[in-house]
Figure 1 (tube, rainbow, N blue to C red):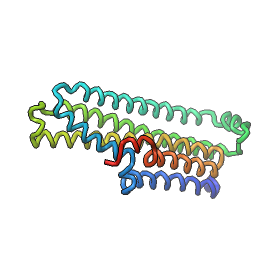
Figure 2: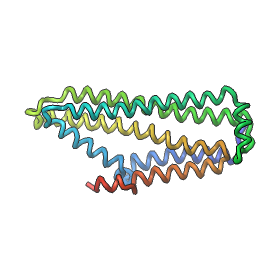
Figure 3: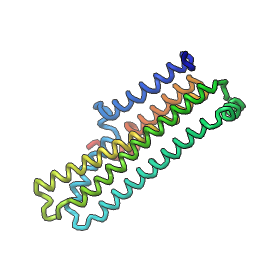
Figure 4: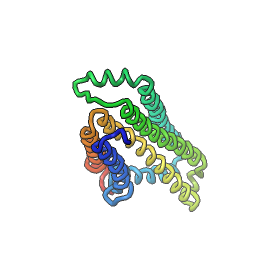
Length: 227
């Protein structure tokens, strides 16, 4: 018998479907391809074309190192979050007592608590894999930048092809970084499940609205223009 009630299962299904639907809408739909992430991808292509004409490419390596450092920070944070979530499993009785004493505390069983906590850990594990792979892709990007031809050969077909490959590699690294951040944001909505399934769905919907607005209706998106 499932330890969860019907509203719990409905809320969990809503969470999973919302996550998948948002990812598809942002990464594959025509509307999503005009979002902030997509517009930044266009600048990655511009960056790599500009890189070919620079005699001194220290600025390009610094940018790549900065992207790597940011990704490494989030990957480390993911591991800390996983450890924190698993720590909650060590003393569920104490955690349940503290949680029940809160003003919004709602009675829950030990099995429910452990299942919800494991789900939270799974989200952070997913985020870690995304950030770790993004870090590795930025590492590959640094190697590709090191293989770029001298500025005198920037107009050759080989140089143009290398710039395009580097831009696509950077784009893929950025896509996985965005997916890792998406997992982080949705984890905030998932925390609502510890209160009630209705709060779970409301928090998930609120997180989706915030992410959608930042991608399609934020000042940052408008600042990048429409081209």
